[in-house]
Amino acid sequence: MVTLETPRLILRRWREADVVPMTAVNADHEVMRWIGDGSLRDEQQTRDGIQASEREWESQGFGLFAVEIRSTGELAGFTGLSVPHFLPEVLPAVEIGWRLGRSHWGQGLATEAAAAAVRFGFEERGLERIVSITQVGNDASERIMTKLGMRRVRETVDPSCGRRVRVFEVSSGRYLNAPGQDT
Image (cartoon, rainbow, N blue to C red; front, top):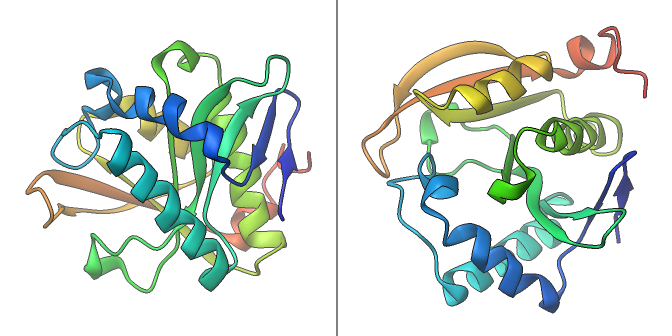
């Protein structure tokens, strides 16, 4: 099982005990505002999402990591890699994504976690390119993408919800050779 560690975080596979705290994250209107059509997710939907990620780990060799705060053991949310089937026009592609509970915003944790997952994708899974997709107006996610060295490559509409999205990408060469990426 893959586990990644950063100075403040542990990125690991999912446990049964993660369902309830992740459901709380998925039940927050502010957290879900920029996800799909903004709908909240209940415990069963959260469980289904975790199970889908675990299946992706088995079939693709990557997936979403549960993000745990090292100092407390608290589940902050997730980050990781997935295939963005909801946006067929970018396929084939692997996307870096994240979702943290509101109490963990504004501390650089999403960037720290996403950077570790991107490095894993390039170094351990041999990916050549990683994309990230965000709804227009989600400036916080765009800032994270920029910190990851990603560049905006297109704007389009998410057919699953009709909202405008921006697609960013970074190549392995650009990411691994960027200053400050040698951690």
